[in-house]
Image (cartoon, rainbow, N blue to C red; front, side, top):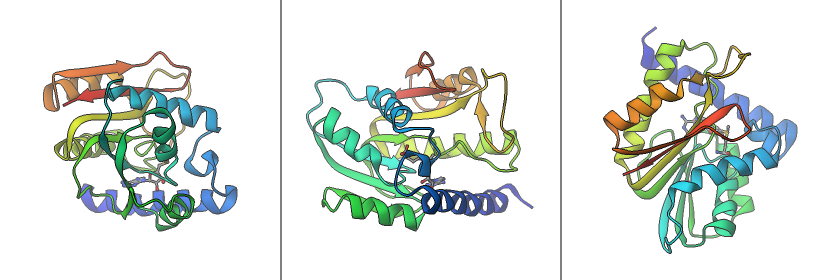
Length: 210
Ligand SMILES: C[S@@+](CC[C@H](N)C(=O)[O-])C[C@H]1O[C@@H](n2cnc3c(N)ncnc32)[C@H](O)[C@@H]1O
């Protein structure tokens, strides 16, 4: 099977996984694969560091938005978000996101492809599950996607990935070497790159200012 076809099949499995989680746990951080809300919010806090403190008006694309928990975080902690585009492959997730957020500054799009431009793009946990894809194939998929996301972003792209600095790995998850991705971002996306790997989760966050 070629890589592209295989990735498409994997995305279907990923969608099914999260929809299963949603029906099992209801709308909460466990439905999107997180241990608890505290760790979900810590991830948002790290990602949102890409937005300078004096920013009073900006737009956002949240790629793999789940039930759009990041929308609430931004409303509370980073005022000035004029438009939030939430992308997800799961119609069930987007349905819940809409139920929770009837506001019209939030637009929800069921797709793996970003079709709108935004000042800031966030990716939280969206690349973590790879099922049986090889590390090589998934890593290439992640990099190709980051390129595409950066092309649709004007000010900053922030994403997190599980770290290779662990002493135990779950087979169906993707663990990424932070130095490899730092290098990738510097060489291909922007000269202004920050790696955050000092918070108490088994992952790191990259901030790419464009
Ligand atoms: C780990 S959850 C995180 C959700 C949200 N970012 C959060 O932190 O609350 C990942 C979400 O990304 C979605 N997803 C996975 N792969 C995707 C893709 N290629 N394109 C769009 N959405 C995707 C899943 O359906 C799921 O809702």
